[in-house]
Amino acid sequence: MPNRYGITVPFDHVPLSEHGAWYERLAELGYTDVWTGEANGADGFTPLALAAVAAPGLQLGTAVVPVYTRGPGLLAMQAATMAELAPGRFALGVGSSSDVIVERWNAVPFDRPYQRVRDTVRFLRLALTGEKVDAEFETFTVRGFRLGRPPVQIPPVYVAALRPGMLRLAGRESDGAIINWLSAEDVRTTVAEVGPGKEVVARIFVCPTEDSERARAVGRIGIAAYLNVAVYAEFHRWLGRGPLLEEMWSAWAAGERKAALAAIPDEVVDALVVHGSYDECRAHIGRYVENGVTVPVLALLPGGDDLAKTVEGLAPSAG
Image (tube, rainbow, N blue to C red; front, top):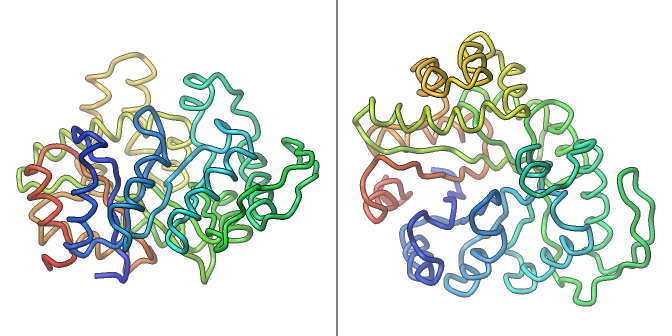
């Protein structure tokens, strides 16, 4: 197993008020990291603040918070707050997110995502040092901002990236890349664009059950929800999966949701969703690491055992 081994939080159907005990248990089982996303559930920072207090040994990260839905100054403030609460244990992962989350749900124009991510990373690099930022970037201007509580230990900043431009940006201007919805074999392609010497955090979708049909049914729902979003569709075309997914995209565009699900080939589900016995799942996760992932972060899908058995069965200590 790798030196770091993470899991996505918060857990579904577990109140945030009860997560403290779960964080402690994760640390006991050998998980080193907990990472959050941010879509339409919990925000990206609050679950990590709980973890910072409940389990002081865990590494914490956002994977990811969008660069559009907070102003640059507020994003720097939240990152600095987490870095103060968990010095040396917090990483800020940022990304463009998608037109659905940014534009449809948050009423913010999804304009020039590459440039906005680049500008935000450059701003954060300055702001998190505590220096005064008075600068015009291509996509926004900041006048006279200075953190009132700059972190003693500046957190690393990672960029969520799918295709070559953003992957290269992650390698060139940030501390690493965050990748998502790809196979273990796809990792080689993406890591080559990032370049050497960078952290590569991968969100890996896992449904630990030996009932292959159940796992594939669950996996198809997740694949349809994500891969019909434009940025993910283009990502998989770039990876060469277009011919396998064209039927799904066509059915989805026509409003035929059941047909779209049925059109997703088993080979796509088996590539993008880890399933099988716990031993088989850990071995599959290991292939992501062999191909260049430095921080695997499990994202649990429903369909397997209850949560307690699942986190124990997938834990590094179980291997």
